[in-house]
Image (tube, rainbow, N blue to C red; front, side):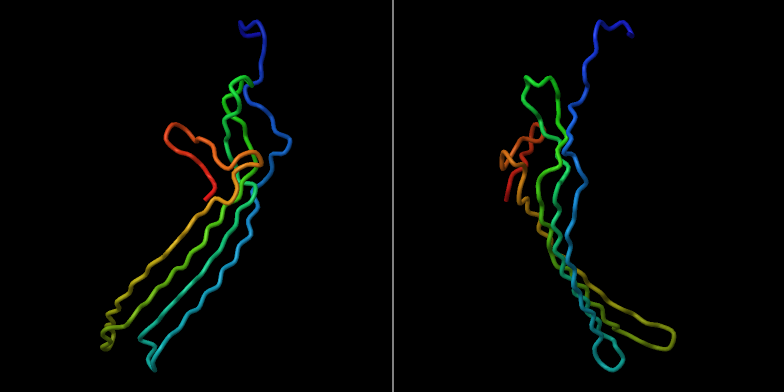
Length: 130
């Protein structure tokens, strides 16, 4: 028995542990303007909801385990991205283009577990709804 008087479980099991599920929506638009198409604009919007998120939750100290694997929680990730490009100079085989892009992204935790809306994640972080 490896010099050990008894055995014990090293990690608690969870029969409800399951895959993460994702519902996603994405819409975009690309536009090229003017006769030579020298100005181009691209815009994308996305909205993604993740269900059954993997969470490593600390159980009560009396359980004898340091962590419990859960498939719970819900998070929304949404945002918009845009890109604009313009051909500044065209001459023979030479073309000089200038471009710029930007994005806005917002993540929101919609649900943590069935029991609580927040719990400590390590020493310095708290996972909570909102």
